[in-house]
Length: 366
Image 1 (tube, helix red, strand yellow):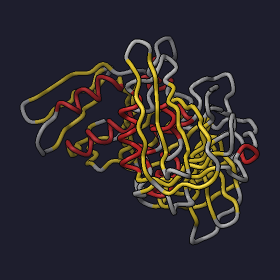
Image 2 (cartoon, rainbow, N blue to C red):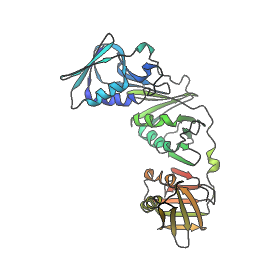
Image 3 (cartoon, one colour):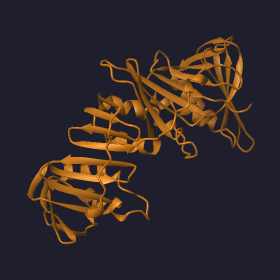
Image 4 (cartoon, rainbow, N blue to C red):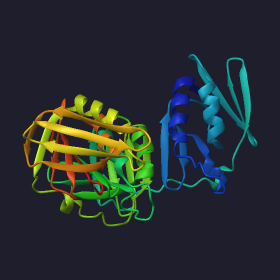
């Protein structure tokens, strides 16, 4: 195999594909590599860790066709070291590949390509539809950080993506907080449900392009096709909990405040939180203020209030301050609305006027 590639495109391709190479030791050695395939379909980079996998086409000239597998870490470091424009040539002979550009020349030992697995694709897709990549990424990225990090319940360590009616939604929860993002669709798509392992979601969303993506789903695999590639992921085979049952239908207190005011007050108050990271949140409709307070025996205490529009009963709830601050960076509205449903019951936080995103957080023991 002898191929010539654009330096920048090669570097970007290797960085993207290397996310899906195996990072653990002790598994099949070739899984820690990137396969470079030069044939009738052009030049492709392939990687898989058996959970996720990718085929990515890159532009280049093929002088001799062939297939080779190279260590992903080494190839990524070499690609990242290139600067400026120009081209790079890869020449495979025997058990080595010579990488050359300008006056630089490196020789890499290959991995046994015959052991490299093919990418598993949905065999009988139960759903097939096309969505803009930018929409799909925004949807999943909005919630994926709230999935559980524990593998005890695989369904909670997943991101639910589902279509219903004229909308598509993504949901994630770790049982202490939950986030749901809904987007209305111009064109209807068939009803479907898939559970993407949360540990895979970040790499997938970081790699998908903004262009239109065809999604295929069966019981075990999800696949994302676009003009220059295909990305696959194992899906979790489990029933997602009926989370709608825990979303409060009514509230005893509501507060609408400027997001920047609440965020600043929370940041200051959190300095004084205890070892449980507890911050007390008080709704006072009479004074039209939302109070924040914290106490730490080693640091001191803090109390302040944020003015806003409040209604309902006077109530005080305690929360982990990290759980209160987590959704704020993803809310684009200037104001947020916090709705309390009672002592020991969930509170809902939204961007004011934005019905597409819902964040639910459970209070701590008082």
